Image: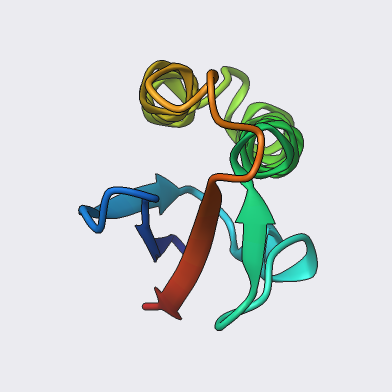
Length: 94
C-alpha cells in the first residue's frame, strides 16, 4: 500500500510533515490550498480514517500511525481554536 507525506504550514508559520498510509489524502486536500484550521483537522481526520480503514481491510488491523497522526493534527489545531480566521496551507505531497 503506498504511503505518503503531506507537508502543511500552520498559521504560525511552522511546517509539519504528516503521514498517511494511503494516497487518499490527495482526494481530500490540494497542494497550495489553505483551509481554516477546523476544516483542515476535519478533512484530515476523514482522509486518514479512510486510509486506516484501507489498511484494516488489507492487513486485518487499522493503522496506528494514522491514528497518531489524527491525534497530532487535532492537538496542533487546538492551538489555533481561538482564531477562526487561522489557515493551514498544504505545501506539498511526497
